[in-house]
Length: 400
Image: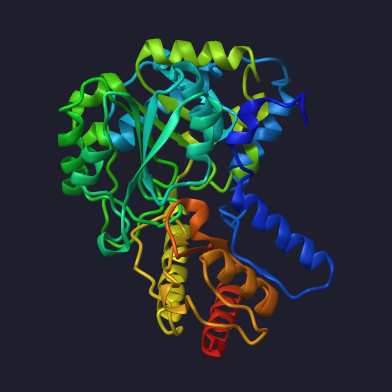
């Protein structure tokens, strides 16, 4: 339509949201569908957090809040960074937003000028490049291949940096691959970044507490303190605390950047939901023991899914270190034909046929910038995952 912004033509809808919507639509029609597209824990928000929200309502905490967040939550965030990441911030260096998405969007809105480049490792979370485009920037993709377990090499990072680079986005553990960087692997990347003092670092630590085995999570500024003055460290309560619908993301960084992001937020959403903020205070300050219990459950699911997918004809599935996703390659299925007579030429063909013929909803890898792959979220029951993987095995065995 003529009156719509030209910018809108540069972006596309979220593929992950679209897959979940399609699965719900088919279920409503009576189809037996297993949805593995949504990136949210199937566990409920812990009772103490819900109780804190109810108490906040009863206390009358239902008014406007300060734009960057209530002081109590920003103090809890400061303490979290100190306790868990050995990072020191002041409350004026912290901002709370309506989910991690708003934090990222505000950072780009506050800093990007037309033509500024943002280096994004591929595969990437679907929203990164579109947020850059919406704010006039240009996404530049640095590929992380399956041969490197989807981890960016220092050489690939350096090759992607140009005089126009303003940001480097870093996500570990990764959505969609689950890949997580060890201290040494991250140090190799920060050594490259030290050579380019004008490049800022935006680190997405949303899956920090979902690392498996003896893997130790580290964030870039922990590894290289010299990056402190040009790093925005973003996190939230959505994944670890099963609070996706509460919409609380937060970040810490240089004061001037936080002020600029606050100015943007003040003219868009203003402060985040007051009740959700008080719930987040309890999440960060309250008992943390349930996190390890749920992490163990996710790890068992990961091991099951990886094992079963690697038994499917034409599928190769690396073992991820974190998050609750796997990102298998379906390269071995390309060029084959389904029982329904559909030729599989792309990963999108693969996931479409899988949904139509077996009722398993996953997300095609090209939506994340690297294929032929597909993303599975194993944030659902063991029974559903077993059933889904058996259907995938059956589907792959039927290809000719």
